[in-house]
Length: 490
Ligand SMILES: *[C@@H]1O[C@H](CO)[C@@H](O)[C@H](O)[C@H]1NC(C)=O
Ligand SMILES: *[C@@H]1O[C@H](CO)[C@@H](O)[C@H](O)[C@H]1NC(C)=O
Ligand SMILES: *[C@@H]1O[C@H](CO)[C@@H](O)[C@H](O)[C@H]1NC(C)=O
Image (cartoon, rainbow, N blue to C red; front, side, top):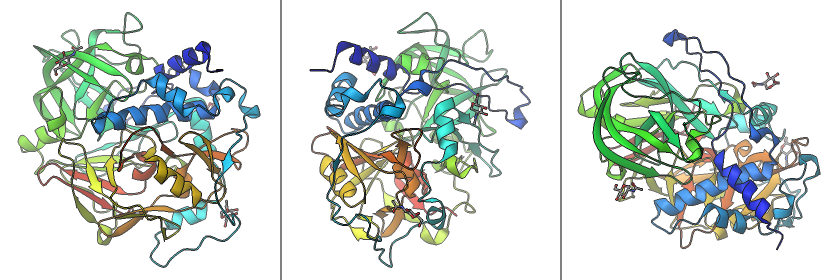
């Protein structure tokens, strides 16, 4: 078997940089803090597209397994399984990559897609689709860019900076006395809030990398509660102590907020190239390992916002609007079409945000997938669907092929419109979001790796619905009513 130990070693180091990239300062005007850009070596720019894609894939699979109470496969096993058919390409120069893909059953790939009258293809997609992978995204992948968000005009909102080609969304809050900026991954798929502790150590070294840390040396209001906590994610884990310190979220002050500082971080978080200093989990606190309120719940309890509502508008780098934001206590009605707003029951008993899917369509045609649910997760990049569903979806996309177990390619120029119907309303994914990364970076109009993968998650009628979908809707969660809202963006 050619899946050699050096291959496994390579994969190990890839996992280490699952959240990798160079740090670029936020340059927020209102903070008055000038930060100089730090150029850091990033392995990412040299990685073949498939490998980058696999990192996201593995993270998502492990996350979904954890979320659905299944045994979490080891990353090595997943890489192994997902690479059965094309392991040999990893490590070759990107220009020589080619996939011996099995073309799926498109009888007539050149046929004009039929679009039923009810199908909702966004107008912007029609204009931009067909042009191939965006140059802006390609550059962000190459440079490992963190693209700063515009300062939101909406009250109680934080801008969402874009990690590379829409792989994650990061906001800045202030913690401690004096207050200092911390960058946090905004994650609707977990419920713990932590930043690194002063003196934090990593599983791979004596410190936790080039990040901002919190403790008694930097904050006069910091109090260690002498209570341990730990959190394990799809990839990566932290352990540390429960603390209290002053937190400012979008100008709203939470004195002596209860959260965690990590004293030990896995390499996914301690790496210099990881762009955030901690994570803000915004699922329901019933999931919290720290057994404490999430920031939005604490803001509501303190009466600083009326209700524990979190609304995400995540932005697509290729649009170059950088207008992503997260709003606490409500949603900015100027961002979405109110006529399209649907309210969905949260069907997850544990505290994730999960909704029933009425149907899935491809270019307006029903794919016949029934009884599916979606965990809506801003902390996941891709869309992970059961194996048969991934086949059905890609079979309907002209030019798509399966290139490895659970991994698909499709033309970067695809115009295929995959839509989810939630609450009787169809939400289409911009075709650009499905064409996740070009197989050959020098050929942006060639084949792209699909943003939709399937995997080894058994018995799942649960789809893990990450940023590939969420870029296409306003996504709002309400802890008090235990509901989810979706609406079309304007
Ligand atoms: C998508 O549409 C554009 C413009 O209509 C066209 O140039 C392109 O070839 C189409 N892509 C595919 C894969 O059919
Ligand atoms: C990417 O890196 C190149 C070369 O260092 C630089 O010229 C370019 O401005 C960078 N792009 C972005 C978006 O940061
Ligand atoms: C993690 O926390 C749980 C309780 O939340 C505890 O049972 C477990 O022992 C902890 N694990 C480690 C490695 O500290």
